Image 1 (tube, one colour):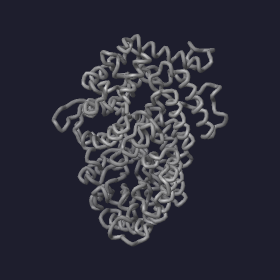
Image 2 (tube, one colour):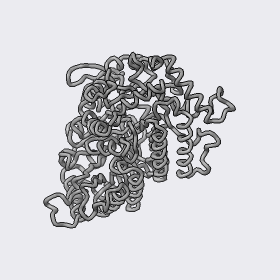
Image 3 (cartoon, helix red, strand yellow):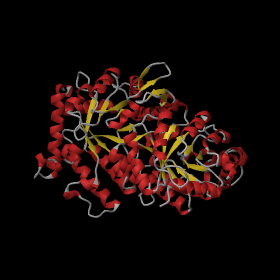
Image 4 (cartoon, rainbow over the protein chains, first blue to last red):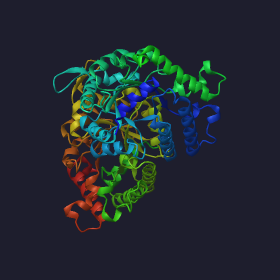
Length: 304
Length: 304
């Protein structure tokens, strides 16, 4: 069984692109042609499914993975969840890896239930990787790691998030039991690195990745140095304000070790003035190609 | 529109019980008569639905609320999610408040999507309250608070969790921007109290509650004093090792301000030697009555 990060490394190399397309459908932002015919959850869910599948078709050539955001599907109740599963299956039918952005976190058998349900191609959801929240501590991460290892799936633990409020606790100095004082995100990062060092695949990265925002390039560089076996998922590129150059420090010298997410800037490209008048799928396609090209030009991924 | 915590206070008074029954179905723990007929997700989901509804019938007399654990339903994929929605509806048809234990957390419009989807009786899931993870910071909690206020729903933010590993970061001293140094859980608690003080209902408690484990009675007392407008959800009672007396410090002097969850000790009571030979529903009923009675005997809730 090939480990998720080995698969991801192979895809990033093959496509020369670390771009992740964030599938964050919103009823009020969809292109006119994709708007739900009625406002029932079932109609909206059906519109989300069609929209996301067309986004996948338009971006599969230059995207290393898709990252569906569970919240927008869950918001619609059961029909939304069914649509999410269908979108995941569609991505995989197109050989696109799926990072399910659900930010789950719980303890013991409950954490295990999330992991078993959400990741592994034979699980009902079928995500290839999952985002996980570390607030509940080390024993809350352990069951996710066991299940991910067993199934060749990947995890991305929230370490340093891209939102301004993330700093309230993540950036503040915390004194660990060892006496070491460092920002909370750094302690979480060290723990994640410890988990990854012990589960390295052929590509040199372990099963536990980290979410580190593009909006804080200095911390990104610091964490890259401190976490050599941890693959980064970098949100905050594009609409959230981070530039391609801001993500450069997240990569290793070979151009691996990081993927960069763009959601709104790509999937709602029909709203961008420079793409006015194009069919919306073409706008999405060009926005994704442009994002991938920016990442090649400004990061070590260009060397691949 | 009555605020969730005002409703909860009224129910706790009326039933003289702060007991929350945790609906954590597990296929391998169900009573023999409830075991799924096959091992497909749809069969298991159907068994979970029937089992949980019978647990509700057996405990509604002495439970203030039910707390379905989303993970066990999500593990089954879409059929599990449909069963979860049905269980929530069933609770509400029996006038039982529902705390959806999903520990969600995200930023901006994504957080808003979770909140809109999961809480509010007219939302597709229809939870009355939701558990929320604070790692992403203040701007990640704000959208949950707005939606909860708008809908009269409640939140319970993870502050000090009941698992041993929770201490890894939650218990360590963190220096806030103000210069104040305190355990991380205490800072999170202060922020939650700030949110609750500003959203107080008739019962004196605000829309943002806190999860504080029974397994740490000293911190429970400390947080009760520091968070006078924050209702506590106390897990860890029963199977996790906390006694009824351990939860006492979580209540206010009137016997309000806290509810106490028991999951396995109640719902899988058929496995307890003292209930051997009883129909499983009767075992559940007696276990819930016993738990409520222990809470009345050992906490200020007995004065109600």
